[in-house]
Amino acid sequence: MMRRVTRLAAGAVLAGLAQPSSAAAQAPTMPVEQMRAALQATAGQWIQFRNFDGRQWVYFTGLVTWKCGLKEIRYSVNGRDLAQRFPLPECNPQMPFHVDPTKDRVYLTFPLGGAETVSVQLVYSDGVESPPRTYRPCDVEGDVTCGLLID
Image 1 (cartoon, rainbow, N blue to C red):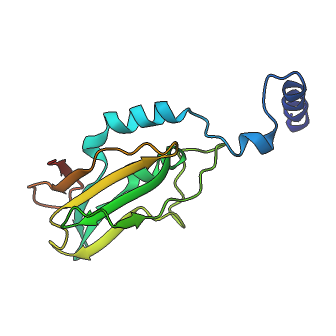
Image 2: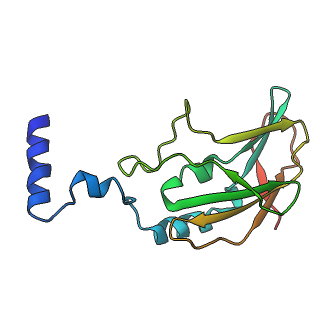
């Protein structure tokens, strides 16, 4: 079965129906405009907060998932200078939304209450910048992951 799939894929490349793997490895599987639209539609969920194990966790998971459409995540904690950069894992076009929990960073930790707000600005892979957005933790008790877009 594997040999048949390989022959079909090679035939598609030769027929001009697909790009060879080296070209496919460089381009995202979805146009950046579509990725930008999806991220804009979910702007209220870009940042999540959680109090867990005696620490405050700030999650960037939803943004890291869209890494193939992003060049940079600018952020600041308790301010709006956006001087820090959140590390983005390398994009793998064959698995564009995959996050490897063993090596991909998706959160920051602080002492409880240490992050009153987190401001974020995205730079999409085509260089377009999102407007800065600011989030704060939800007003809930218990082990809950939640963030509120306030600006």
